[in-house]
Image (cartoon, rainbow, N blue to C red; front, top):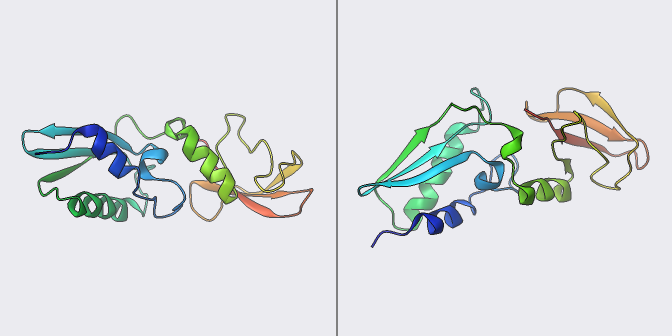
Amino acid sequence: MKPDTDTIWAWLDEVPDPEIPVISVVDLGIIRDVVWDGDVLEVAITPTYSGCPATSIINLDVETALRARGLENIRLKRQLSPPWTTDWLSAKGAARLEAYGIAPPSPAGGPKHCPRCQSAAVEKVSQFGSTPCKAHWRCLSCLEPFDYFKCI
């Protein structure tokens, strides 16, 4: 008997993002759809951007997780439209980012506060952080550097 899609979504919520393992690929919002097409499970995945180096690892991790649960007929579909946006990041994912020390995306274009000490006294060091989707900031209160997940 094939599992329902809610069960599969729960399984995928356990697959960590390879670049930020404290959030899942579901929390990141890149799993766009899970549907059964006859006996084939189709999972639509939207990369965070077209050149994301983690895309092949994410696909492998998703397929591995599903195969570990006994699914054999899997089709991963790369869905580029609409393009991924940080609006798809779940509230749970944003909270986990902050607890990990990465400021979650903010429509204001920068972090609201330091993810470590909560001070609003922060400044941008560089538009480029540890990955292309992050910028490097520092707190003027605790003096700690941190990544800010850019709005896309």
